[in-house]
Every structure is written in structure tokens, then in C-alpha cells.
Amino acid sequence: MQGESLLPIDIQTNKLLDWLISRRHCNKDWQAKALVVREKINAAIQDMPEVEEITNLLSGTC
Image (cartoon, rainbow, N blue to C red; front, side, top):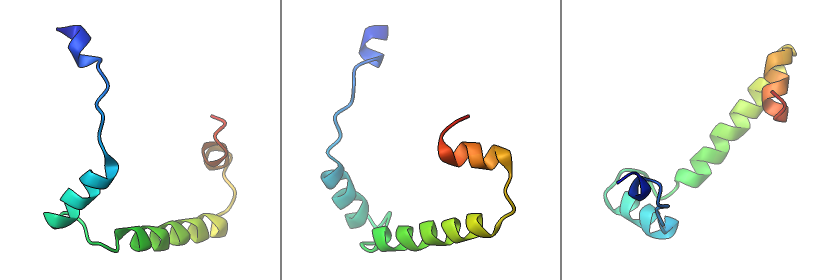
């Protein structure tokens, strides 16, 4: 039984995205909106005083 829980799940992302859009779980322009959010986060991080913990987190060295 435990071996079955370790099997990988193959999800086709294009079909998943089509399903989410058709069920109105997300809008068709979600990728463009996500880019805007990322740009705002990046700008906010640039304006913040440098904190070693955040710098390490963003650089991937924890």
C-alpha cells in the first residue's frame, strides 16, 4: 500500500490549465497578472533595507 503512495503522478499542465480556465477557477490572463505581481514584489524587495536572512533566502543559500 505504501508503494502506491510513492508513485509519481503525471499531470499534463496544459490540460490542467484548460480545465481551470473552463471552470473559471482562474482567468485567461493569469500569467500576465502574475508577472505584474512579481514585478511589484521585486520592486518592494529593492526598496527594503538589506536584511541578511532575506538576502540569504533570495540567493538560495540558507
